[in-house]
Picture (cartoon, rainbow, N blue to C red):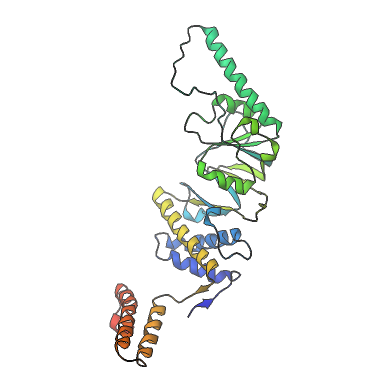
Length: 330
C-alpha cells in the first residue's frame, strides 16, 4: 500500500511535515514551520545517505516577534545577549577568523579559598598591575594569530572573561561572544571549522575557524555567523531561530518543529508514505477476512479476531470525530 517518493519531490515532504503539525497548538503556522523543517533536513542530508543526524540542526529561541518571524539560517546563531558591548567593541566583522577558547580571560584564582588582606595602597596597586600584565600577555598571543572573533566557553569556576579583558579586546577590534554553552562546542566546531582551545599556549592560527560575516542582528537580539566554509567531512549544519511572544509558545513551537524534523528524517530513511486516517488498518482487516475464508479450524478464528482488532482503530477515529462509527467502518 505504500507509495514510493523521492527526496526531490519536495511537495510530498511538505505534505508529510504539515500533517505532523496539524494536531499541534501552532498548527495555524504550519505553512511557515513545515518548509523550514524540510529545508533544514535536506540541507544537512549527504547525497547517498539513508539517514540524517538531527544534531546538525541547532534550534534556538528568542522571546520577541511572532512564529511567522521564525527563520532558517545557514550558519550559527547566538542569543541571550552574549555579545560584548564594551566601549568601542565591533558589532560586525567581515572575513572573520574565529577562535573558540575553553579557558578564562581573567585573573587566576587559588585552588582553595583564601583571604588576602591588603593594608597599603601600594600593595593593591601591585595586585592590579600584575592582573593587568597577565591579561595583556594573553591578549597579545590572541592578536598574533589574526583572530578577530572570539568565542568564550562558559565557566562554572570563575568569570570566563572580566571587564578589563573585554576593554583590551575592544581596543584591538575583536568581537567577543561570551558564555558559550558547553553543549554547543561540537556544533560550532563543525560549522566554522575551528578547534576548541584549552590553553593560551595552544592558541595558534591553524586552530581558527572562518566565516564570511559575523554581525549582531538587533531586530532579534542575536549574533549571526554566516558564510561558513563547507566542512571537509561533507556534513553540513544549519540553525533555526524560533521567535514568539511568550515562553510557552516558544516551547510548543520547538516541540512541534522537532516532530516535523523527525517525520522528514523518517522519509529519508524509508522513502515511502502510506494513506492516513486508518486506511492501512482497514485494508489489512479486509484482506485478512477475505483470506480467512480459505483456511479452516482455529486459524480462521485467529485471523478474524485479528481483523476485528484492527477495525477498532478506524472505529475510534470516527467516534472521536463525532461521526457514526458503525456507518463509516462497516
